[in-house]
Length: 254
Length: 300
Ligand SMILES: Nc1ncnc2c1ncn2[C@@H]1O[C@H](COP(=O)(O)OP(=O)(O)OP(=O)(O)O)[C@@H](O)[C@H]1O
Ligand SMILES: [Mg+2]
Image (cartoon, rainbow over all chains, first blue to last red; front, top):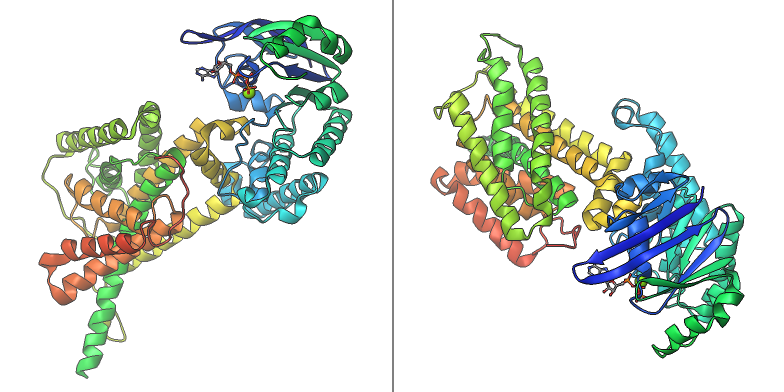
């Protein structure tokens, strides 16, 4: 069940956003992906989740090539993600945001929906309970009936995470989940990510918060200008002079 | 006695308005659902309604190989054929949804013309009146005379609207549609097959339009030109109720039908269209989001 990225290249016109990157995410691990702004992290996520077809190279999951498949099929294979710029469904309640992500687990089909409303009702009830349970894990069940975008920022991030897990994924791609969170919230996030991993879900994490990354990742890959410049456990990477140079060159602290 | 008479005329006019309003509402629902899920204003929808009417009525009138098909069966055939047409049109429209608004509008208008011309080529520009499968004698209830076909149109439309609402509320498709309309990419990341959802929306929209057309055919006159007349009013109802809102399309259609009937009955039928549109513009000046104003689509 491992995710393999092989010689991935993603070009936008003249911009080479991802330049010949290979990496893997083994089952049950937290793989960190770090790098300065514009180094291609989100682009890799976008290719893996099916938004872009790579210019060359391939992505496979569990031995099956997934690059080129439509996004909803990749989700059905066990992928979920959150977004750097948070993309909740604005006019929906917190609960509906989560329910929408459970759609493809519905057993009742179109005909049953019309011919057997009782079965549908039973299933709706079951899914709602499941969604509420998920929300309670993220301590936001009290907000279930509120419009998602009316919640405070930190809680909206939790809704996004709950929604990602609602698809029942094998692997989740988190794009900067700590952005905009205060210290306490970040601590909570770090515990939650570990809990998610311990429940058997693999995590692929893009994050600028180095304390968080170094605290929870099992392995880290580093990008700079679309190229992978380093890889290894947190200790090796954080002391790698090439990595320090890449960050210092852009005046950011590691 | 005289006031009693005015009251019954008024009720009769009102019921007629509700009947025609149901027709507009079902057509407006098609605009609304497509707009809601694809952000596309489908100006070909009036033509889809017209074709759908023919798809049912040609069987009922024995225009296909002389086969005389009973009205209820012709109704089902027409609705199904038009739903299939909807599926095909969605495939044609799919690339349009990513274009800018101007090209999108032109594309749908052009397709509408193609459908209208096809109808003229296949069935002729000349229209025909359709006999009601029900008795032509009005049913008189408390001094109010109602055509059985009008009652069929009203009850049939009401059932379809209730059915659609239950379907959208209960079935996963309703939420999926809303999600796809708001953010196509995120919706697909949540496992929603956006193209399939859109195809279904097109099929349902076209099916409803055919149902409306076949139910109303014995009351109105059937000809290819009805695409423009009813298409425009359905569009106006869709705007009046609140673009993209499902209840809005229903309310908008009914309000439009009733206004039209009242202005025809009590003022002059010459002003019907004018009065209804003036009211529409006034409503939009006061409430730009429409009667059931709800912002469902961020784009546009
Ligand atoms: N759709 C696109 N079209 C054109 N260029 C793009 C597109 N997506 C990304 N890029 C470019 O690719 C490069 C990598 O962007 P990407 O968003 O992957 O960086 P990132 O590592 O996620 O940065 P950040 O830390 O700021 O989120 C940037 O130069 C960006 O401008
Ligand atoms: Mg990014």
